Image (cartoon, rainbow over all chains, first blue to last red; front, side, top):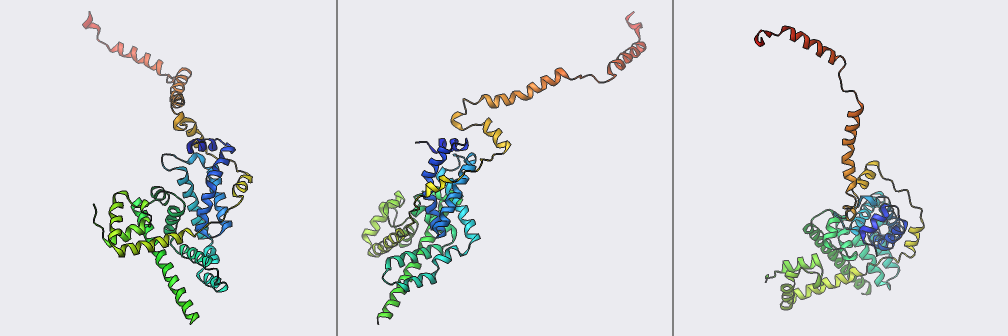
Length: 190
Length: 150
């Protein structure tokens, strides 16, 4: 298996086999990150596609001394997500707004697990972008704090502070919603 | 060993999560000992564990056929500026640097070769300078006092 450096040298030289290997190695994790950021499968795939195209066209710009390849790609993907969210502010709200979450729950009270997932997605979507990226990349992306700090262009201490704020805010929001749901169910039963 | 405060314990949970393997190594033992002795901290840790499990439910689609779709698309031409080409030629990737040292050396020789070529081809004399210099020499000779040498 090629190292990241060998892979990128080959891609910079126009080797399409090397590009295919890079796609197989990174596209899925980029798409997963983009999905958790945007909330839409189609948009996540588009962002993964654009990220991989930039890897192809800009391969010569990657500097292994500055960042690992996965870090560099996540940084590109994050910038594309930010552009996307600026362009289409409705993206997350269209799909997972709080009202729709409530509507979904009202439609089918039996699907508690799905409702919990929708609530979680809505709560994550309401986090500020930096907190959301920090949480998604460390918790789901398997990246180290040092790598994520590099992607977000902050110190590791600042990243840990972002993570703490994100997790506290999410935990409190989910707990409140859970309590509200329990109260409303109690009122419905009585 | 660090004495744990409730605030520091909450901070640890918020920053690193409820999995003690992710806590900073130098604080891990003290934190676990704190949880063992403190029922309130143990209860708080359970809440954070429940939260972390809830986070895991944020699954992503399978993205079936994603790689195949990406590889089917036509790749654009890799565009690089002239400066990028020159730099890439001069300074190849680090593991080939030693073998390619002749390239920067060759570049350094170019001004020298250019100087030699210009020096051999170009006429460096200033128009009329030789003649005027000869006339001036005769003029100064005529002014010289040769009596001293006699």
